[in-house]
Amino acid sequence: MQTGEDTWRQAIQDKEAASVAVVEAERALHRQLQHHRAGSPTVDDAVSDLDLRRTEYAAAVHATDEAADVYYRA
Image 1 (cartoon, helix red, strand yellow):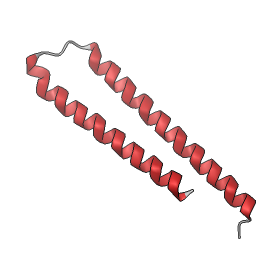
Image 2 (image 1 turned 60 degrees about the vertical axis):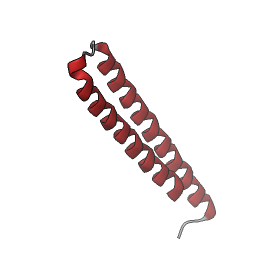
Image 3 (image 1 turned 180 degrees about the vertical axis):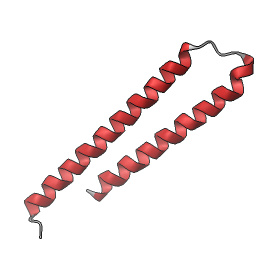
Image 4 (image 1 turned 30 degrees about the vertical axis):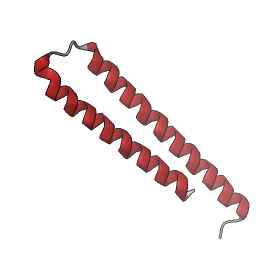
């Protein structure tokens, strides 16, 4: 059985892990955006651009949800 101090330590570790996960997700999304912006979009690429943004948004939402889940379990 965990003591109160052990529980707090575990909660802090879980919160730190969630924070690291969020930072990593934000960095990955930033890199994707920078890589995507490096090209010069054309009218033909408009649909691909929209699909990529939806994918990036979905990944960000998923990462945020996972981080929030870990945070609130702590």
